[in-house]
Image (cartoon, one colour):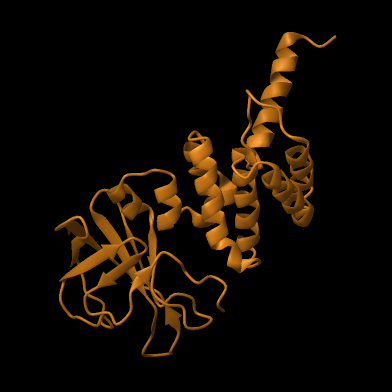
Length: 239
């Protein structure tokens, strides 16, 4: 007969494994047969089978938080593999439905590794219920990705009022590609406008001044002097 201590140890190991796979462990409810079959398929990384059974569960109860949440995790994994690109909007819809039915999922989604791909986006953090200015510092802002080099520029803002900007450029002597980083500080002028103060202005910067303004609107950031807007998507699968 197993001792209580050993039983408790096994329980902790099992629940830790359950969480690591992105499944919310629900103490107060029994999984439906459809969700149980979906989880078993998820364990085996049989994405098509898992999707099939989560969708079956949603046919029975479209607001089932467990099925909505874990189907969002499944689609996020496939999106990370550059598959099912049309499902990004679906992921947000599923997460929104899940947190409305079970608000405790908001804290879970912020630490779930299966959703890490979307953690730096506006919509993800809005669904998680974070305050507006905290959302701003969670977002990784990207310029366009015209080819195999990835985004031509990017900028990250920290909660302490600092930022780091990078821009693709080619060295004059050998033409090698590099992404130098430039630091600076920022302050809020209004709830949508910030002023950036660069320590050093990049030579390729379109506006050769240390202080410039930027306007933020949801998942778009417009910085003075740039012909394009920065967004929360790196266009990761464009190359």
